[in-house]
Every structure is written in structure tokens, then in C-alpha cells.
Image (cartoon, rainbow, N blue to C red):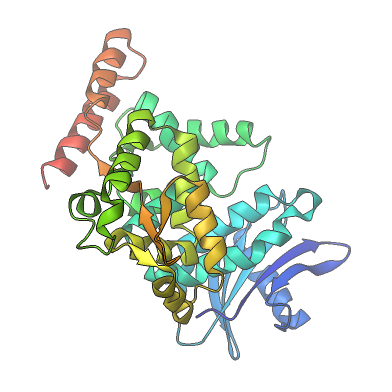
Length: 359
């Protein structure tokens, strides 16, 4: 597990300044901070570097000269920095977004917790962290409309959105490329590489079918069956998928403690005693995790005459990659109005065919 997280700012007048760190007791020398600065300064642009300094294994994210902010992850010597890279990038963007009024400081413990847990994240969690990131979301939503645009156009657009500041474009795109959501390719006749939407993300709530079909087998007393099924039906009769709701659920999936509770409730109805056992696995505040799930309208609780409580999943969630079949109509429309060159559109068709013929 990582040792700690440090947020540093560099200025030519004051040098390295530690803005915040977690946990508070971790120590790092001025000499080491200077080495971190020098390692990034050599490249000049924002991005990630990893290196060893004596007994320290360091991975550092640099936001670029506009901000001069460094987010530094201290690892144990045996840990692989590559396993934490994507989570450090996403956590750093969240810090940068909340620099004003130091509002990021309250987020540092949970950001560190997410980064630490990232190597053990499953596909659901890794896709969640991608779409939960604001820059990734902007890129995906625009590609849903256009399908393809140039890398240079993307860079200009993001700089405009973020008022002149944006981190290294290659760092931004790397995780989307690794997760097969986009593909970067050169096209004859274009000055810049093109970015293609390869796979879209689908996100929506879904009924907990196994629990619905056999609630007694899953631990719910028979007297509550009809009420439980009615609650599920009532919820989905009124449910309409939307991005705001999706983002609310993604926060739950990315909260390690809440996610442990959710995973248990996906398999069984849980009594309070069952939930208390999760404390041994790192769920420190059972009431707070249940509150988050309840406020997200994912669970309900039933209580029998002996005051025994049964926590039950009312709505589950799914996130996954899908073939963007709708984009074919987009390509036809762009061909008709000549908004993209024939070479670009033909390459996009080839990219889609080559990728999806493998599956």
C-alpha cells in the first residue's frame, strides 16, 4: 500500500512549498522535493514521472507550467508505479479542479484511499473512474456526437474550456486508449493524428434479478417478499437513466467502503450483524455507508417484530463498454454534408471493423 500523498507548488521565488500532505506525519526532505521538480522540469510539460530516491519510490504528477502544481505519491520500494498511474492522474485532476479556497484539502484522504485501492479495482470500478473524471467525460460526450476529431482540435478545445490551462494531451488520452474507448491513428492528408470513438460506455440502473426471484433464499424473511418486490417495481416504473444519476452511483462504486457493502448486498439480504463483520475488511462507518446507499435509492430496510433489520438492494447498477452502432448514422451524415474528409471517415470505418471483428 502507498505511504502517502503530497501536494506541492513550485515558485521561482519561494521554491518548493508543501500545500498539503496525507497522512500528516509523513516526511520528505527539501532536497527530494527539488529532485522531483528537476525531473519534471527536464521535460517541460505536464505529465507523470517515476523514480527512486534512496529509500523512497516516487511517482509524481506535474500539472504543467500554468499551475506549477505537483501531486506526489510515495510508494514502498516493492510497489510498481505503473499500477497507480491512472488513479494518480484522475486524483490529481480532482485536486486541481478544487484548488480555489483550498477545498481540495478535505478530499485528500479519500483521493489517497482511491489511489491506494486502484490496483485491486475490477473492470466496473476502472470504467467508473474513467467516466467520473470531468475531462474524460467531456471527450467521450463530444465523441458521441462527432465520432472523430483531430488531436490538435481537441487540444485547442480543452484549452478553451479550461481557460488556457490543460495538462499534457497525451496523458489525458492514455487511459482512454488503454481501456479501448478511443483509438489514435494517423490518416493520410491530415496534419494531426485523429481520435476515434472505439467503444462507448453504457451506464444504467438495473433490477437485482437474483434477489428479486428468490429473496427468501437470499436471506429475506417470507413476510417481506411482496413488499420488497413491490418496491423494486415502483422504483423502475419511475426510473429514467440520466448522467446526473449515473455520476451519483459512480461515486458510490469508487468509495471503497461503500462498494464493499454494495458487493455484499448484491449477493444477499444482510442483517446488521452481517454488515458489522465488514469492519474487519475496512468498513469503519457502517451507518455512513448505508446512508449513502439509501440516499442514492439503492437500498431499503425491513424490520421484523424482534427489531432485526434486513438491508435489501432495490436497484443495482451496470457500467460496461458497448459497440457504438449509432455512430454509423453519424458517419453517413458527415459524408453527406462533407464535414469530415472521405479519408477520415473511411479510416473510421476500418478502425471500427478491425476492432469489433475480433469480438
